[in-house]
Length: 194
Ligand SMILES: Cc1cc2nc3c(=O)[nH]c(=O)nc-3n(C[C@H](O)[C@H](O)[C@H](O)COP(=O)(O)O)c2cc1C
Image 1 (cartoon, protein in one colour):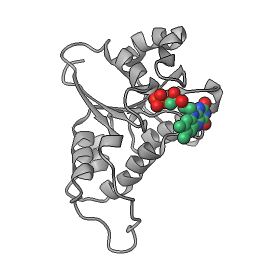
Image 2 (cartoon, helix red, strand yellow):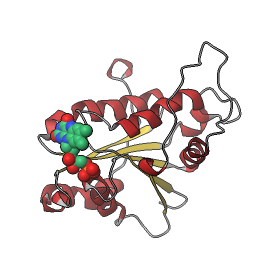
Image 3 (cartoon, helix red, strand yellow):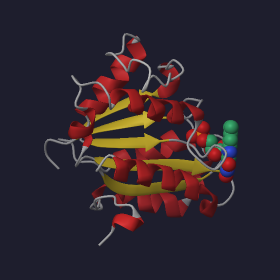
Image 4 (cartoon, protein in one colour):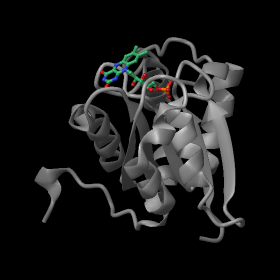
């Protein structure tokens, strides 16, 4: 795993939540030579994303949080979206970050698409009710990876809602031990397969 750099983007609106706890358990298994960067999106509030695609386009972000997140994203070989399940999908903070990709994709100086292609997108999510209800979240991340020609490592799910609950989900903790060791296949839309 040499020369890999994992960026953990924490999408919960609270610090130290179940999603973060589970992501940290999985990250503990990464070899020491793998760099890790942890960023909580709640500490880097992004502005509303303006759709300027057909109205003049985008210039390099002058918002410091957007700049920081863009630079960290471009530097990551492995991007871990650690978002709790909010209304069956990613949290609002996470969704807003992904919306900004639409602008970053159009910055000629960033080559965002070319840089991200071939890198790996992973998901970690805590949920309160049933794992099957996290399908829209997993679909969002899978399709995002496919659109970007990234690899998709899948989603590590953990059950819990009160603080620390996820540490009682033995199945999730077991899966966390090997989650990042699993090979991530290229993400492809079903209709593109074969
Ligand atoms: C705004 C909001 C929406 C939520 N929506 C869902 C949901 O659709 N399905 C579910 O199982 N849990 C839902 N939950 C529960 C959270 O997924 C759960 O509390 C989780 O532990 C929160 O993640 P965190 O501990 O990392 O902050 C929701 C919680 C909040 C605050």
